[in-house]
Length: 121
Image 1 (cartoon, rainbow, N blue to C red):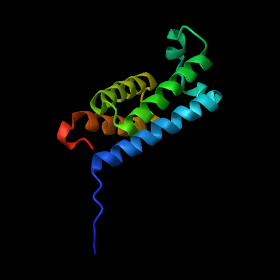
Image 2 (cartoon, rainbow, N blue to C red):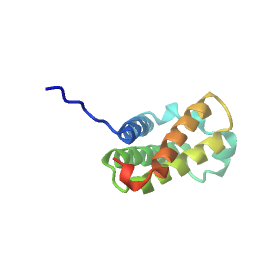
Image 3 (cartoon, one colour):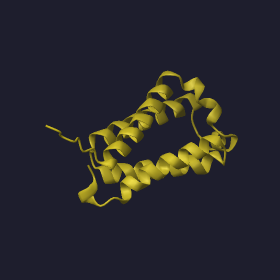
């Protein structure tokens, strides 16, 4: 018996993107001091509360989005939220080596959002 395991590409997109969001979310919650340096001066000037609190908030949001992405709960909506979130991150950071990574993550999320319902697995 030679059975082939079929894995849909969207599953791999969800798995990869979900893992990244869960990892970054947990890291922000456990080590917020490691992420403070990524807050640009402009962004810190418009945040109206403690920067550590802001990092905790981002960590919670990323963890939640990653979990929801893996569970496929409202996949189209969650992938749209992730796309918007990453677009805001890209715009707020300017262009650097981290932005290149975020552009890749953004296109992953956008491709999940743009898939037809019948192809979302």
